[in-house]
Image (cartoon, rainbow, N blue to C red):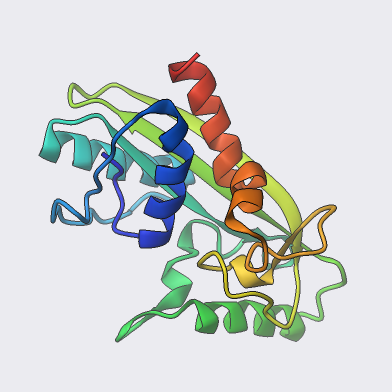
Length: 193
């Protein structure tokens, strides 16, 4: 089970697991409640989600806690990446990206405006065991937003050495190099090789 209600994350993780013949369902598809993410680390929140899903379903659960850390903002939004997008009517990542850029402008942050996407995966068993896998990709925040692909902050993140933001990249290219792909490669080495 993928311990998420996020359709974008589910789509990416399904694609990453497909070559291994693993069939997945998600916490959202099973109607499981979303646990409160009360930790201040990606690993802590990944553990909360994975263990809650494993206990509720009796299945091995894989969770992902990820976000963008912007250097000039002291690593924010970090574990609060999704929180920055919360509005009374749901998540609005366009608003969150505008907030990020506005804060960088207010601080007169130097260019390039360094950032990194971080992903922590937690694989949890119903008996309480777990394994953690982490990945990151370095880059910078760019403006204006570029691209309609991906999700979250992808349209303002330009990975090092690339000319396209994650929001402009073909999904296959992003999946091959993203923070999630890097964490997932470690999971594959531990579990499928």
